[in-house]
Amino acid sequence: MKKTSWKKYAFEFLSIFIAVISAFALSNWNDNRNSRLSEEKILREINNGISIDIQDFDGNMGGHQLSLRANAVFRDLINNKTVTQDSIQLFYIALFRDYTPIINRSGYESLKASGMKTIKNDSLRFKIIALYDYYYNLIEKVEDGIDEMKTFPNYFSLINDRLHAHMIFDQRGNFLRFDLPMNLTEQTKKELLSYLWRLEINRRFKLSRYETVKQAIQNVKKSIEEELD
Figure 1 (cartoon, rainbow, N blue to C red):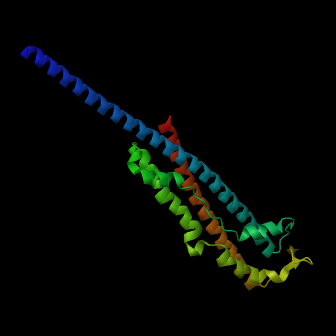
Figure 2: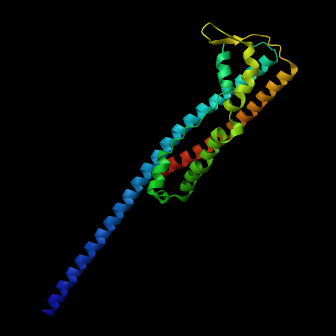
């Protein structure tokens, strides 16, 4: 009876032990699976967000390129060179246009809410943090955070005050063209050219920063897609 009882209890203990270990293993597997699914969901959300950011940045870069063309047109106009005025209204608007980046941060906010350690790949995690906390802040500072880099508030009045006397409007007040030649004084001409020079320098600096940030975005995007694969 003692032998039979010992075998009975040993079997029951072994059964309970196996059940507990199995339950623990199943729970651990399920947690890992949920963690991986959460990681994949966040990575896809970030990847979709930065794809939209690339489109937004490309649009801003195209805007700055248009503004540089406007800058060249007005440099010729001020120097009394022949200028086709078919698109002069567009160029006059583009000359002073500021381009604000619209950054999609929803994926990054989801990552912070779930914990940075959700992304197991240390290298990828650091790249994502650097993108949002450094590179995106860099482009936002250049476009909106540094007063001397702002175009409209710094240069519109200075330039418009010297050019409006030569602007021709229709009966409804719509701007049509400039009355050429403007025959500006040498002092006024140099003043306007100095403003255009500074505008060009600022825009080329912004474009260089966009290129830097785009490279960082593409690097992160490639790493995310490799991780998802």
